[in-house]
Length: 371
Image (cartoon, rainbow, N blue to C red; front, top):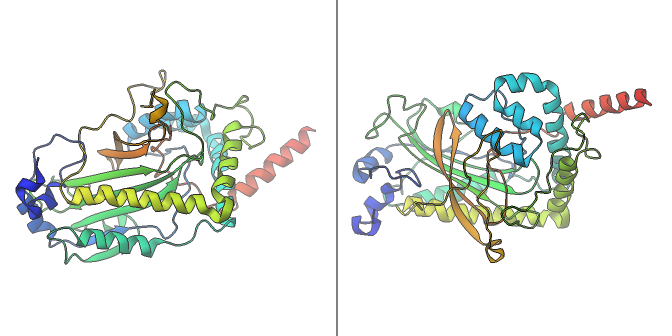
């Protein structure tokens, strides 16, 4: 597809064929005729960062759970992999996996909050996205509405834009996700279930440079499973939790300058890719981010073998699940960063709650009784 040959107006809508897909090009003029009538709903949290946990519990997407479980097996605790693999796995792990998830996410998020890293930037991001969309030919008069969630607007014909940044469960990197989806029964070729499945969509996952140095293919990961899987997952007993706490302190150092830089560069890269999509120049034929694998044969990451490539930023293709359907995802990351994006919507409990404190108090009581 050559967008320049079709003119700017046509190119603006050719984007809306899924990224990294060989699907037949859409009728740009017909798409635009509908899209010009649709409001643009912006789903943008006020906080610049959401905490996440390596658990997909109660998932409506079995394929997503199994994919995340296979990848988590090599990156995180095997208990998380088992818990995310199926409803049965979730039942057998019970409160132990939830307790480990709290130990992993809450201390680090409290560190970031105490350092002032979690200030409101929602309005600025919303304005930035609105400006970007209005620059696309044919969408200069778009109407924008802030929305709380996809579920709150799922019955409304619309263009939906999501922009959210989350920190990985191990605090290794910050991921900024941008999506653009068009839901309307009037779109040419709209599915019968148009409320659940967009006619056209784009999904970008922008991964900041990792807090730790990048690694070559085959290098040993520092986030190993715990030596004693029967412990309660406290940072003084579990390497992964200790590493997460250490990384959180690094993000918070120097008035959160690493967080601010990661968000700035992530949004700049996301805007670049978003603008390419809106101009009909979305990247295609990208290398896969992961190779095949399973729970018994952990999935291998596409990492470089050449040290000179470690710090270069590359684009990769991945497949994820959201709202109950598979999506093509364009992943932008430093080539040597083995950072999982699967849990970027697996929100951690609010660090301001008392669940973590009650759990730690109970653990301390049990330890005192044992002595």
